[in-house]
Length: 354
Image (cartoon, rainbow, N blue to C red; front, side, top):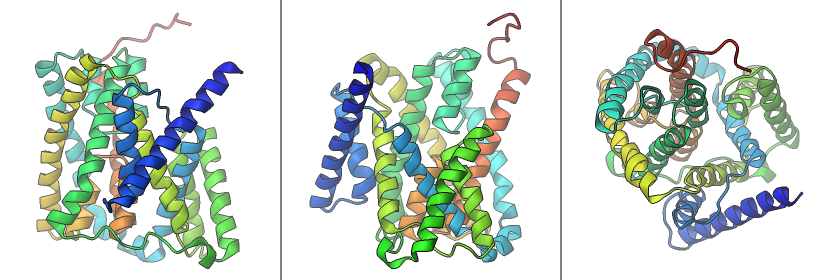
């Protein structure tokens, strides 16, 4: 009971810090206060040694909102355009292989990481999945967590400014209608799709269950002419807040040696993957495969949840952007462990181990 109370207190304190960050960003008119405000405030608190903590189940619940938003954007019109996306989707495997081909030697030779840690640090997949795979293969889970947290955090903080200054995009696109203006029965259906999709996906062991489960179920409802709206603006803002909170909390307990080694390695790796992302984005744009903003967001090597939020904020083609990120993450989650075994990366499984 005492442990549970301590955990609750940490999470309550973290949410309070996040709200202060949001209020501070809002007060001085900084961009994306509900995303970058909590991220910045909680990151500072974590670096100062405060016992910040992610939101646990509540954070997962908030991610279901994005799953529903993405699913609702998969309309019959988008499905009709999917053959046009085939060419840019075909670039995703090459993009993933390019990052791994440069990233693994970088972490091995420059930072001296062991083979398993270098392998999974170089894979631009989901943070939790790469840490889990690395742990099972004998890698350094703390290093993996910091590398991937650094990659996602820096990209999420920089991307809005790149959208404004390189692509002349606005960050004030309407993110959704107010809840009071949406049909109550559709709100109820969206809420049900969020919970049923999430828990159903968890039951069958699907990766990214809080997002992909609701997304798949909502796609069915959207294509079946049952859902016609995205979740309300208030829900999207709440999802932004908890994404920022989770990213900042990833640095809980970080030490100075970890900053000098793992966080700095993650920063340098961001430069590498950003360079590759720029090359692939330029190719997509020059070949006329997508508008500039859509092509850029589709190849930004961050999480699908974060990029979904930014796609909504700038008014990009949400379906196009997320389809590329889902493809990238799927390829990495299914392919990285198999390729690791083929290349002899990781410890062999002991059949007698309990």
